[in-house]
Length: 360
Image 1 (cartoon, rainbow, N blue to C red):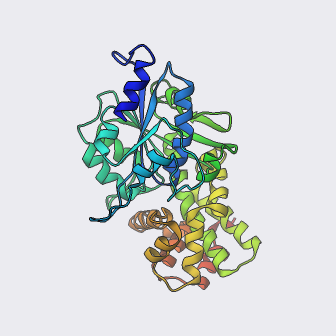
Image 2: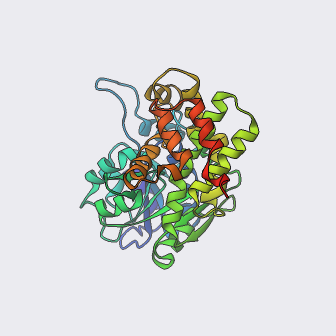
């Protein structure tokens, strides 16, 4: 990586000193992180007056001690492809992968966090106090955390842990389609369009990956998290072989329980896309058709990645129980109970049939 940077600046007048351009780092080397690398690797190159021409990409080294095979980062740097998580898609050559988190992040002005929400706490702990004073983050992580008393947005966890402003990007996106440059759209939620939104739109927006920016960041993030619970419910419907009208009803009722930013890309479009093509639907379908534990199904179907719907359903159910409102959200409640073996298909069916949405 150092040699590539030196070569670039030797060929461009040695202008690295006093460089005011924004350096970008992607934290996460799964399929979504790799897809976003395909986007921002190109956008930074097209805007050399705004962004530094290289993008760092941190990939967790999941090799066991003594394993002499290449790490994911080494494979990406050699082949410009993430063969494990996003095979067949070329990652731009100006995306430089590394397994060292601090090396990837310490000079970054913009951190793109694309890891399962279960891993956010440890990553933030390792980076705390080691970032640039003017760094900002954007979370592509879909989930909600709970401290036992209240729900918290993942972006708030990141801000609290790192002391930086954190925006969110959510949308109706499948990683392979984004990497293939098929038309997609997404919504960025931020606290200030002037301070965060404008630069992030320049970073992510392309002719085929269209970005809308809003300051309603809480709704954007909640939609991105809650739709995964509904996708699990849709997966249960598929696994049980119920009719299409049942699946349509399940999605509609789940959307009513979500009730935030319906017409943003992060709302109804993301919900529909995930209910038909996402990993949460896939995992839920396999779970309800078998006697295997959820962790085993994730290992078999997701190649080392995790579904975010089940833990989000757990956190949401915990809060609903705390405030005594579970009966108002029967789909969210049913998904939690099915995954924990406390409800079968009859209970799931009744959650739809007796939904309070039919009471008026």
